[in-house]
Amino acid sequence: MLLGAATSSHQIEGNTFNDWTLWEREGKAPPVGEACNGWEKMEEDIDLLLKIGANAYRFSLEWSRIEVEDGVFNLKNLLRYRRFVDALQRAGITPILTLHHFTNPVWFYESGGWLRKDAPEIFGRYADLVSRYFSDVKLWITVNEPNVYAYRGYVAGDWPPGERSIFKAMKVVRNMLRAHSQAYAAIKANVRRAKVGIAHHLRVFTPVGTPGRIPAYLREYLFNFLPIYSEISGKIPPPAAFMESIHPGGDFIGINYYTRDRVRFSLLQPFGVEEFPEGVWRNSLGWEVFPEGLYMLLKKYNFNRPVIITENGIATESHEERVRFIREHLKQVKRAIDEGVEVAGYLYWSLMDNYEWLEGYKAKFGIFTRDRRSKGKLNLREIWFSI
Ligand code: IFM
Image (tube, rainbow, N blue to C red):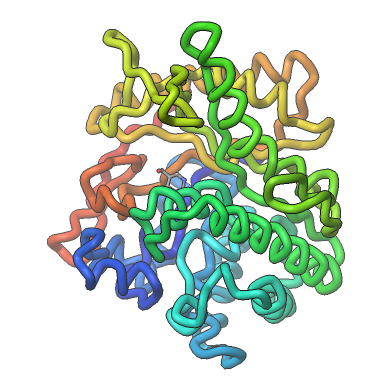
């Protein structure tokens, strides 16, 4: 079984230049600055992984470093990731490469981004180039959390590009699924043994009272079911498309799991309103911690394939609480395994405290932390012990 941790490029590398940089410069998000100095010190992360006994590491390639202009690739930067993958493999750690984790090159963003008609082909070209250089990497994630990306950027509007249109959000989901399909085909053509999937953010939606079933069902359908069903079946259902065919994929099911929403019916909000009862275990961002939800989702969304828990983590200042969180979730993983679900991996989010988007550096998801004042010198806040 793959056991390890996950990160993403913008959240740890520092000094990135992409659409989030523009968002930060407009004062709409805290500045990422040097983050964890990961671009300079990636290899140090291997020591951290070895320290926790990890045999796998999920991280993302920063598209904006690789495709610096439309169709112009910076091979020097690509080879920097190549060296890192070599070092991981020498250390006996399986790399799991993510091609898109929320951030986009500025040229892509400014020309329409994921609303561009040709966005899937553009992404497919990037996936094709990258996979030629990593033909020995077995595990690939094309896109991370297309549902969250589309919701935050195109419905809530608090992430770039700050749109508020369900119609556009559906177009973005459709394009990301098409892009996944293009990338899937490119990677499979270049990497003989590749296993390719999407990292889906799944949530448990619990209705409050009988009328709450309606908005809970709507959320379940759009947020959980639509992207994962499209990936597995190769058909994108309404309202994102009318059973449009894409490449059926999902060599494994990637699940990112954090929380559940309790949903109450509202006449004013088709998706209902969330309830926050007292006395519930919550992380430092106020998200409910509900370990049993992982079991429920593993049972419901395994599609009789191997599942990799591509993210699961807690924002907390307390080491003890993090250990308790991991233990409780692993118990639920075991429960699902005992009932026949094939769980091929568990990756804790995150290896180290990092840039949590709008929350900046306030949310502490890390097993380790970095003392940012000393320019990324490691300060080992170690909480991992035998779980
Ligand atoms: O930090 C994020 C990550 O980028 C995507 N999944 C959820 C994490 C915690 O919010």
